[in-house]
Length: 262
Image 1 (cartoon, rainbow, N blue to C red):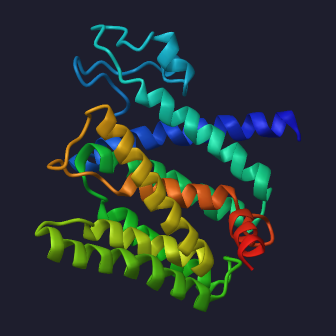
Image 2 (image 1 turned 180 degrees about the vertical axis):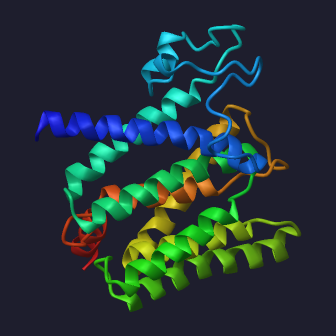
């Protein structure tokens, strides 16, 4: 473990997280991601470069605009910190392999998708189109350490299961249960992680959703009439699948299950 390298990766991840905050806020509003530069949305004052340091900037400003003292959400620092930590974890597992670059890029997208879905109950088509384009490039130039048949089967299983669940759920409940954005996200994820990992990610997604919903209902934060975004749980299940994978393409949880059951 090289502390200098991990420090650089941490800083890089935090900077990506800073950009993700921009994406999370502006993309659903159809705003430019680059113009204008970072500024206070209350008084429109540009944020100084010295105040815009990822993670530290939030604490330097004590969570408030330097000019008008309007509070900033702690989410900004949280997204930056989480992006930094995830970058280091994925590198720790995969080193500078194909998996590292694929999974870090995928995780960054999932972070943005999670918070956009929480705020707006949508998964922007831009992420889906970018994901499909990336899948085509990765398989066409053989940059991804998976067979295209494995990716195709993963996309069918992940996306198809969510589609069928949503279809029958709507028939039974008489309202939308799984959004089509979740289905499209499942197709992209399945294409990138393959068949076996898709099955595990699905299981972990629904397990996380069950735990999360019970917890939130216990806190009386939701009720049965409120729509619940499923994108964050899909993202969490997929992330847990990635973090329990190995450099040789195996998965610790899947191998443990096979040894235990068979």
